[in-house]
Length: 124
Ligand SMILES: [Zn+2]
Image (cartoon, rainbow, N blue to C red):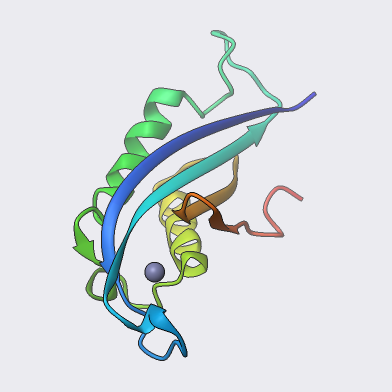
């Protein structure tokens, strides 16, 4: 028996990938969609996945993504600003904020492409 929850948040940001061989080296923006998945098998007395109340999850995720909203990602994060790295950074921040049962983070940088990050050792 397993349950999976999914929450989503959005932010708009600019970035550039300086050494990209193509147009991604130019300053441009995305409407990012962030999906967070948590999994677990224990429900609390209210039938809610233990430690993973939607309201708390959403609040925590919004707290993270608000830092990126209307920001220039190259300044906001100290790393390459690929969707891959953004998904890893958000995963790590959620982890650091005590989100339990975290399965993976998916970051859409356009309606047709996303990157996901998960910690392969997590939950095994
Ligand atoms: Zn881009």
